[in-house]
Length: 133
Image (tube, rainbow, N blue to C red):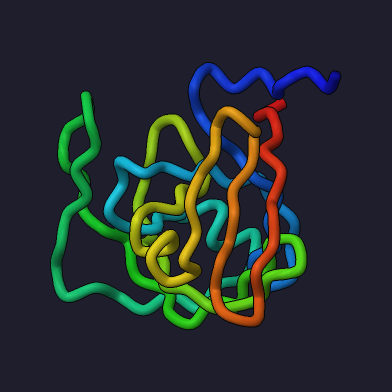
């Protein structure tokens, strides 16, 4: 029997954004997809300046947005698509996919199987969870 990734209750998946590999934390409690300015630069995202706006996370003060990246190329396993990301500083994670992503990809998490399932018509696949090492 395969042992479960050590996740401390969080689920991470391997992804490629703009063709660059990364680990992403998938969070059903997050409304939006967020990436740090440093990670956005690393993966060469085209970032536009926001017309104001703030990001408020649990147990942290609100921080101003650095920008927005739209139509970012994303690859998760055999699934390919695009998504938008808010560019803002975060304390604990480089990239978070929230409900915006889950709705778009028709994805759901199955922590008991350490997997995320994407059910988008014609693009269904299983994405294994990974540890954040």
